[in-house]
Image (cartoon, rainbow, N blue to C red):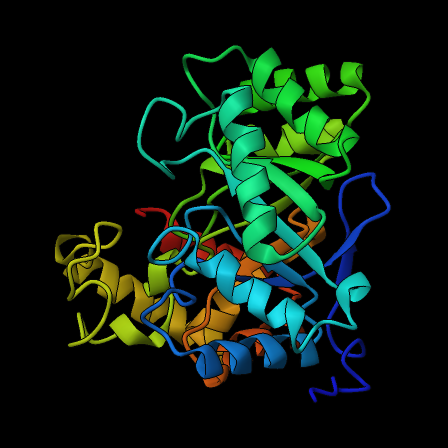
Length: 330
């Protein structure tokens, strides 16, 4: 029987999510690509158990995570029935719906039929009565925002979600969605945007919008698909995501100019006593505007390396200025 570490809450910082009473760990574990049918249940279980031992209480999923779609929720459901059966109230489980999940006109986007149907399927795979956070994974250009937000409100009123969130919404869409949800009586808890040293679009209005609304934020891809790690300091290594067939990271994106910038950033990180990946995570979390950052892990060692980032989340003005200069052409 799994016995969690008794000091699991000692080292991980927990941050309040916007104006809500929910606190999330500075680092959350995302089950995007490493919890599909191509990984053994034992490896998945080891990562999940170690994450919890390190104070990671939030597990971030979506209906289509795998591969194949649904596999990550099935893996999490297995852990919830076994290792975490007695620990449900110490764990935050989130899931999303918005991208393609099944064939036909009702298998993606933001209609009421798709969102609530998908949530029921997710709960079945997870073996849960409710998730803690249910997200609209992306805005739907053809469905009225009132319908999408109404579906999120219904999920809460039906007792199938405690909180609701958005992902990949613009500042303007976020503000309008928050207004609709407030009128319905279900406040917007959190927004999950892509954010990293190399992708800073959230700084152009979204973070300010979230501050104004009192909404939390959780950044995905803070390591930019692994680019912001030591894997690419000498170019593209064999077996890496960029060397494979991933549609999210191509060989053309790892240019000589980018590699040179990564090496310079790595030097700054080493002077901080961190790896490049640890500094990149700390940078996203700097100043407290971002509630949490989602990290992936294909092994326990990789997870442990990421969690070391929380030991040093502070940056001096000179460090930030130096990093900013290195990022100018990104």
